[in-house]
Image 1 (tube, rainbow, N blue to C red):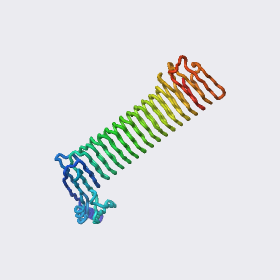
Image 2 (cartoon, rainbow, N blue to C red):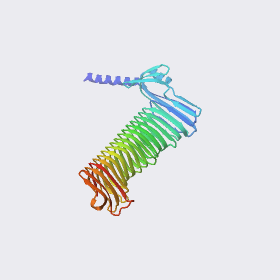
Image 3 (tube, rainbow, N blue to C red):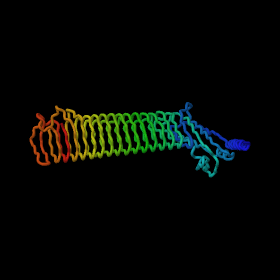
Image 4 (cartoon, rainbow, N blue to C red):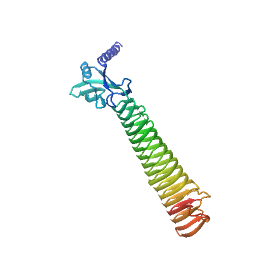
Length: 431
């Protein structure tokens, strides 16, 4: 038992002695610059805060902290670490990246090489926190890696942010935003418009003017935005009102939107949800559309897409293997169709046109009793149920696999709805 107690005591004494050799040290570097309309900050190895000043000057403080078991290493760190700060020509700049040329960390301890070749070993837990106080700026550029960027000062023209594997928090700004984020997260307040690059990041935005965004493996939220141009890949976008034109080029992403105006889409295996949409044009493959109410949907090509639309003004598409479930169609259905499934629950009495050129297509819709229409049919191997007994025919040929006729409902004039069907091996129920 005495041996065990001695061993425990020796271990405690050894640990205490080792801890006494490894000292935590902190050193502050400070400076002041004259106010300028533009400020650039390049920082590493710690958080950077940009706060609003009340004295009309730019002042900064870099607080360096680290652990070391070597007095000489501690002395060299304090002596050789530099902050470069200057102001001229309408621009101020602060950089904490100029002192250290290279840093390698193994088992929590760092070997550092400064710009003049001086080397320091045995440094642990190195951190440099930079705090900058500045009056309102026209332009602000901040670059940081691995840590946080916090902006709490007014920017009237342009805020440029570059963040890598860190976190960003920005208050509302009057100016525009230029942002590049990788492996990062955070929030940005209201802004006058933005150009954004995201890679494996998650950013929440406030109300934004016009937005140009390129995102991969990322998530972004915006309550309202002007015109939106987006190129995205395997991302998630949550948007409120899009008041301008939406241009979306996407693969493998999911979008939830509130209100869309005019849109131009190029989608591949996308999920698109919206409450309302005005006019949508474009093309898509393997895409799911869920829209409550919209105007015109015109797709130059649609391949194996799925549509669930509550109310739709008109549909015009070149489609293959699609599945269309429409609650109400009010004006027109124009389809060049191949092996599609089309189910329309209700047609508005103001319907103007149904034009289908199809192969292997199934169509099921209910015609309003008061709807008057003219119909022309040229079909082969097609099952057509249209209530032919209620039509007046000027031409009717049913021979073998062929069905050709021209007819109209009683009293239909030239202004009545126009139905034109060209089909091969289709099933059409229009009752």
